[in-house]
Image (cartoon, rainbow, N blue to C red; front, side, top):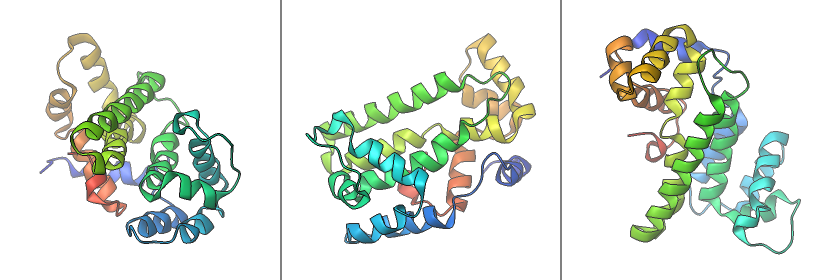
Length: 205
């Protein structure tokens, strides 16, 4: 149990890390049900321009091998499936949302590249050992270090010494966080995401 609850409260109160909107909450709730009709999810997504753009971007990606592009949220939901739609929504709101500003000492580009690489690696590995959970692994990889971003953007003055020490020493980041902040980024992410009512399967360990 973390011994620095003030860090969590300040992150939750930070305007740079807003809780998900009603629309995002609704989509996450709907996609919790594997039998939810794709049209029901698409209708909610269609009311949010940012989420629609992210969904279409992913569904039209060459990675998925579709020969024609689509501009329909419903067709995008059908192409991707509910789990990947859920990943797209989480990515748009949480991961991309943190990148609007750049705290001192925080390399945002390196952070996002590492996050994406972890997500892809987790999905590829899971395809080999537990194919049915590959999409869950993709989302878990996407969020595994989101607590670093939450700390960097939510309490930048507190986190700057952590980043500086990490750059100098190469000591494992979670140990530095524990020593200087009395909490680590995995605990931060789990507590914040739990407060947002995200499915615990997608929270960092």
